[in-house]
Amino acid sequence: MLWIKNLARISPTTSSVGNLFRNSESYTLSSRFCTALQQSETVQATDQVDNGLEQQEQRYHGLAPTKEGEKPRVLVLGSGWAGCRLMKGIDTSIYDVVCVSPRNHMVFTPLLASTCVGTLEFRSVAEPISRIQPAISREPGSYYFLANCSRLDSENHEVHCETVTDGLSTTLKPWKFKIAYDKLVLACGAEASTFGINGVLENAIFLREVHHAQEIRRKLLLNLMLSEVPGIGEEEKRRLLHCVVVGGGPTGVEFSGELSDFIMKDVRERYAHVKDDIRATLIEARDILSSFDDGLRQYAIKQLNKSGVKLVRGIVKEVKPQKLVLDDGTDVPYGLLVWSTGVGPSSFVKSLGLPKDPGGRIGIDEWMRVPSVQDVFAIGDCSGYLESTGKSTLPALAQVAEREGKYLANLLNVMGKAGGGRAWNAKGTELGEPFVYKHLGSMATIGRYKALVDLRESKEGKGISMAGFVSWFIWRSAYLTRVLSWRNRFYVAINWLTTFVFGRDISRI
Image (cartoon, rainbow, N blue to C red):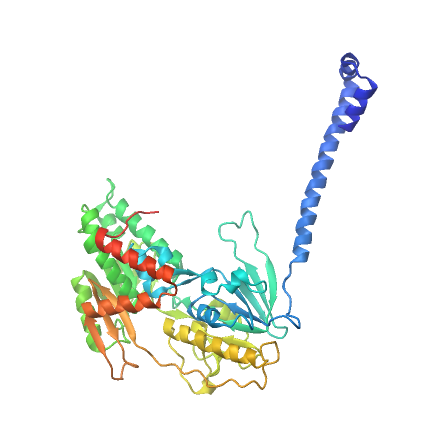
């Protein structure tokens, strides 16, 4: 373009410029020159962007080891009950806290089943990590990273991570980075157990995360709406409106109770055309609520039957897109299948070259340490006692994980104050009393304003066990006080009130 300006200075009159460009050879040369100039500018701009990205990748490799004068770094893998309780209790005047997790919140799992049918809103059971530990968003050395851990290098005190880019894989490629740690806490939880049954992963919905509850709610409401559309056959309508729950533990029973309330109070009023076709079935291989008192179990069975929940004893052999097959050959068609049969070690835990407990979880001692490596601890559902400790593995319960997190936070604080917070400096530090778990009891709601409360330390022990409306009131009061923040307590209380007055929200969003 500068060449044209210079040309205009040489031949300032319009006619002379016009005469020049009427010459075809001159016009072709000038056109090629301008095109080449534009291509050159484009290439240079592209190279600058590529070089900038390369320089950015070269600049950012992760978090380097802490130096003298800096606070030691506690790296927490996971944002469940155990990891979040530890982050809440850690002394941030002693440590920098870094959390790596594929979700930026903690899920209050005891109330998750209520969100599936609209009793509670989803945000009421999700607590942001930055509210649990404000230092993560305020302190210069504390961070939260949306990523998964892919490898542990315990010799160099590093973990290798890869970012999570949900829904953006075509426009934003995941990248890897490393984080050096002084203390590492493995609190990465567990995965739902499928027992190797074909078709479970492809066709069933688990109930462990908020997005699971959202998927259940969308599918349940979709089936209700499609079942009213003209042209659908009776057999297909009955299949769409059949909700099947596999697993008779507290989660499966609570979801069945919430579902029965939804059917009896909301579906019968707002979906009158199909109210007689919708039904729920609970499938369990043994006894439902096996950890509860036998009297409470019988009460739960009686109340679920009254609510219209059919109880089936059987073992699932195969899950197909529209039906599951039991061990006696019975086919059970379904429109919605919720899988709640317990948990087991995750694929990441299995890949770690660390000693395992008899159930395949990360082996720990009485102080939550992984004995085979230095400065590594494990808490929550991903960990279990080594056989050498002589202790039995604790159940995968929220109250176990929460108290392990609280215990380890206190232990790390004591260790940091004694000068053992930095990597390789914990040897010889007094650890204090080992962790001791005392069971506080179990509670479960079964719908119709009724619940079970079992406050015994064990199934064979003595203690208070009760059922009915008073138990339901205790259940709600206890969980309302256990919600972590006043913000979410307010949300839960308001949701319960609006549901009682106006019914459940049935919008499919």
